[in-house]
Image (tube, rainbow, N blue to C red; front, side):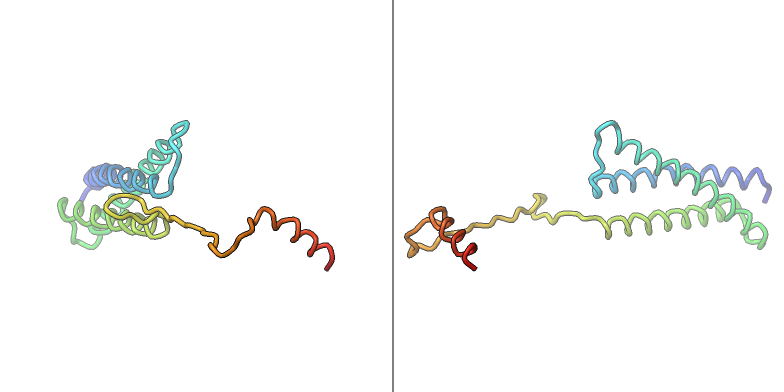
Length: 142
């Protein structure tokens, strides 16, 4: 396989890497609550999409050249292998990002809220506010 075919496979793989990594980065921005103030989340997604493009280009060219050196290279076979490797890498990164994220639990699509109620016993007649002075006296004497 020629170098021009290798570069073409690299470019096609890079385009797939750009799209897939942008999707995973968009999900990760919501998982990690990256703020959208001053386009911080957009910069995060774009930077990871560019990284996915560069990694896709490298994976595509390297995979094609290795397969051509081993005599197992055809255009479609090299393209499929390169895309499988790249999408596997992106899937590992996405799954790791999801597992390490602090995502709140949901029930029927709504975030769960913890409600705590503290009740004063009915048998207690005095208010805790009036007991504050006696606590201060007992702390000073000890």
